[in-house]
Amino acid sequence: MPLNDAPLLRALAGDRPDTTPVWFMRQAGRSLPEYRDLRVGTRMLDACLTPDLAAEITLQPVRRHKVDAGIFFSDIVVPLRLAGVEVEIEPGRGPVFASPVRTAADVDRITAIDPASLDTTQIAEAVRLVVAELGDTIPLIGFAGAPFTLAAYLVEGGPSKEHLRARAMMHTDPDSWNRLAGWLARISRTFLDAQRAAGASAVQLFDSWAGSLSPADYRAFVAPHSAAAVDGIDAPVIHFGVGTGPFLADMRLDGRADAVGVDWRLPLDEAVAVLGDDVTVQGNIDPALLTAPWPVLEAHVRDVLRRGTAARAHILNLGHGVPPETDPSVLTRIVELVHEVGAESVASGAAR
Ligand code: CP3
Image (cartoon, rainbow, N blue to C red; front, side, top):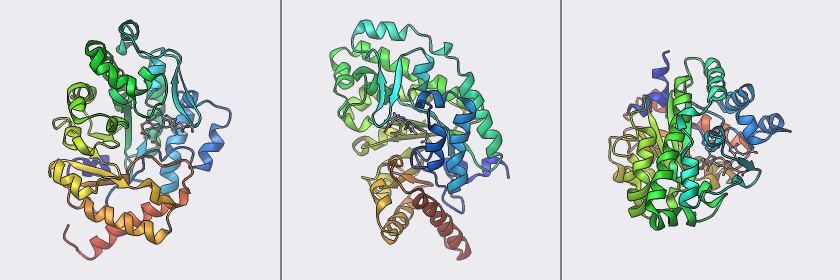
């Protein structure tokens, strides 16, 4: 079977394969005991830059859950580390920067680094190892952080709830903001291009914190930079954000997104009413329900599948990442259910 027939890639092209493709954001990581074992003694960003380790961690959830795609194990701040920016990921907290980028002079300094100069050797090597192992049935999704979500960490210097400093910069010094966001778009693009060139079949742009923006600010200060990050890339694009309901149609990036990721707050059929019928939707199991009794979770998954039929095509996923405390057998069971539902509807000849 050529890889283009893989359910994920067919769904991104707007087809409805027999079974709805399913994968999970953060499917690799702390919910898996085999991941926790491998990570002992290695810092997160060092693991990301060790090709055989990153490859093995990427493959673990594919083997265990039989998901329809791998997502490259890395992090949105890896290309910043490759650019020489001092960043660490603190366990339980997230990315932390030694020097926050807050003033026009800070922006001058960081944007003097040429995004084309990044050494992506380890990234490319890890992707090649993964793709060789996945073969021609399971596609690998490459990813990068969208400029706003990266800036939300970089301007603050670490994780924050409301990303006030990044949002303030848009209005206090729009020129610095646009230079910074434009540079971050090129940094993320370098990271995406490296993954694509090494064999990733699709890419996802994560704008996890875009939901803290007003629609007006999203349109004026963020969407153009996110669009630049994926413009003209020769791979299908999934664009994901949390809390983006108020400006969901803008998440299409003027047709550059082949699929839009929807969080758990907005039922998929309502999302489709806003997005239109010429884009694929991805989502949106509520991560909170992963701890619910199976019959409750099963009913929710079936409801998500039913609502997803409103779209031209649907990729089943969570509304955000797998929480670290998730029982991984629950994820395996969701994959089995989604594949069974597809097989049942083929057997019954149900019109889809
Ligand atoms: O399985 C996958 O989804 C692939 C790998 C992946 C990671 N980070 C691994 C990771 C992906 C796609 C990301 C993207 C990422 N990183 C995002 C966007 C997605 C999202 O969840 O919204 C964001 C906001 C980050 C920044 C970041 N990195 C955070 C907030 C954290 C969590 C900190 C913590 O310990 O709770 C990280 C670290 C991180 N990235 C981990 C993993 C598996 C956990 C680190 C560990 O295991 O020690």
